[in-house]
Image (cartoon, rainbow, N blue to C red; front, side, top):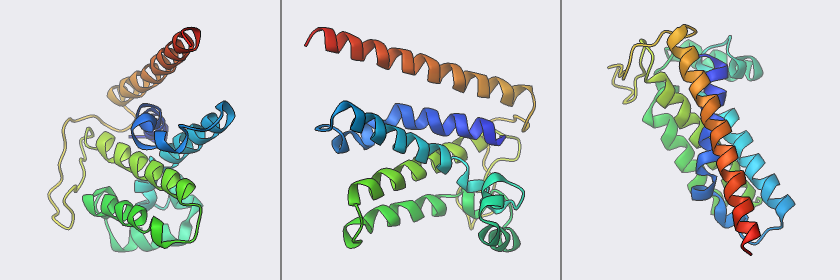
Length: 184
């Protein structure tokens, strides 16, 4: 999948999951704080949706972090380590370390959780390509659920469906928020 499709998938993932994963961090907040926290989370899911392609030096993440990208690209093939359960486990370790760190735990967890879910959305979308992913790396068996070619009609259709889903979700959330506000 292309970066644009991955970003749409990551953003949709953030929009749909914010109630599940970060709601406790904004329950008592005012409207502006809620918007800020949800925006931060969705930004993290969007950035996270690009992270697995750091294994390609020409990708957006590869260009942003060239030293890391060159190291990973030199030592691992594309869609292996960074597209596996091992890479997802890395985020669980980061989240588990939150209580040990002397940082703003709430923001740390919101950002880390967002990055992880965006990362997962990337892997899920790549499962639908003809290349598949090494989900159980270091096992080299590639898994795929469909046979879409990157940049071809099938991917463009998926990308458009992600965009339409985002618009419909935002309209639904706006409607339910307005109905709730009227009944208060």
